Image (cartoon, rainbow, N blue to C red; front, side, top):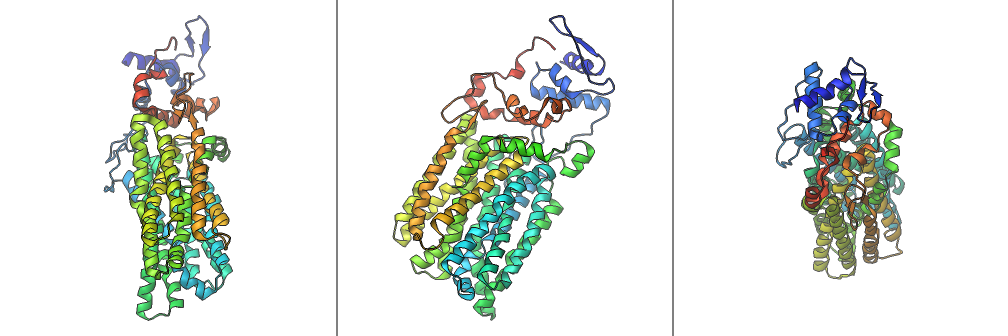
Length: 562
């Protein structure tokens, strides 16, 4: 093996010409003063990827160009991504990033949905009509549609830490300004600008995908997203309690609801500073430092954008996510008022019932991520897709039932079951997203997340704006939409892994071929594709246990020439 390593390196460093078996001669363009990584990789194609990166590391050590690799508290792969997920650990940088991401996203969810549990009071104070309330609910989720796409691109270019903290700080003033809203227009505007903060979901998922390896990335994404979404349920409890506390102190009710908004605003502000101070973009450091040291190349916006929008899998996931996460956002906006009006409940009681839907996120979305990782161990990517389709379709079925039942007890039980399936589908979706594109991961995450907000906007416009449909009828029709918009998952196909109904391509297609197709030959000559090579090697588990045992990677097949 040492002989192979020495020979491979000498081809690039010393020899300008190499003899090919057919008798022709080929010139190497690598300068003699330093090794050319692309030629080392090409010359050692008979060696598995894991050995190839060892070759590069060894060579760099010999040349004195590499420092000692950083030490991590968790076991890591070749990209320094954690291969285990320890929920109650705060080890830097992996688990610390996890806790910072979900707490900051939780704070944004609390702020965005702080108004719905107090709507019966706010509508009397501001003289809001049913149409005004519907428009404000739509505004709260529509602003994040484009913000999420922009956030994805920002994460690709500047890193999740800076992108997330900046957005949180920019939207915090809107939460403070809610306390001085005096009309339906001002109330709509503060809800619109506060809703931009929901784009931090994209940075959360990007951050987890950058910190955790393929075997646990679904779990990490599911728990971070689920515990962040928990804010939508927690705020249904928090805001009525804060409101009641302020009332007991002596404030009148039309003043108490305004003071109450300072609590989520302050929480959101503090979470942003925590991300900036304690967070790290990647296991190896922050984007800016790595780019300055040359350890990470700065990609072009045009390239990131092109490879993201031309990948049809991202568009399908955006559509289907619109009717799992989009439905969850819709329920957060309407469910408290629905139970308050239909069953003539007290405000606090309606808030507690509504909270049970959002609070299901503590187990349901993480369970979806864990289920995605579990089925992938046996069935690979095809298992992830099947699990997503089944769970989301069942969520649609229970949504239809929720709109048909007429008793309070049955409605509460069905709502909780429906919430569990819909939220688990969200976790399952982001068990697939990290594998769609390596180069445009942030943009694909943003497209998918933005699709969730588009689904929420369309659903509320069609079924819950004004008085065209009763809320129970709108919920039933929403369930039908979930079922139909989940069907396109059948069209997602990865040539190296297959799809729901088809196996891998009959042509010899590897993970390396798929992820390197995003890079041009000139970019490969510069070594810009090396991160994608490592990711491809770590993604081979998506073949599933059966396929992986039957398929021998191309990289392990001896080459006939160098």
